[in-house]
Image (tube, rainbow, N blue to C red; front, top):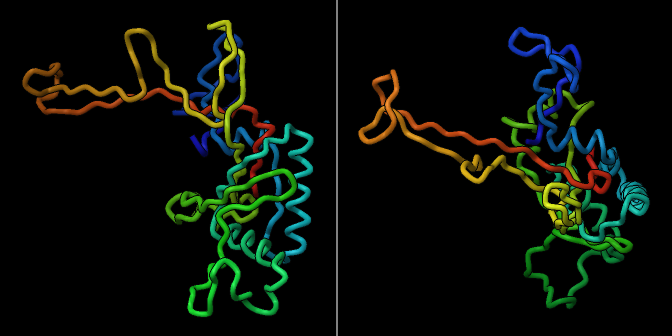
Length: 236
């Protein structure tokens, strides 16, 4: 749901050429993951690099200007890798007039024996609130962290996701519904729900199969919905 990309005309899967689209003979074009959806329908930035705190603030203001033109969702979540998280901390710390001269004792019962907290979990800039969180998937060498190291030119450093819900019109129900900007939908009917379907074969009292062994089968059919992608931003 994060990395998936749709197939294009001429793509090959299992040795067969896939025909993309809705024409005769069209095959499965795949699903659109979070990163691909934002890059296709949302916003992309290369700002906040940690090179210079003042420059990072100017680049962050450019991000806010883009949000102003796209819908201005006031509350947003920042899911970033370690380097970007530290760059944002440095950017915010540089705004403190006491940063160059040391800690200002006495403020909020801060004293010299207290461990100094140099991390920020949330901040407000302009009319926007941002809540920052480390995205382990972007740090782990076994996942995207390894991809970012091997291909730094296309590295993904984080995503900005709007909080709250948006209103959409459901044609089947004939009414407006409120849905989170980012959510997962599962295929279901009145008789079957594929959120997480399980069944056992080859066991006493269970369905039989040609294999003389007990097996646990699991099935899910789902897709990630990036609703209002123009309010999202991919940090590359």
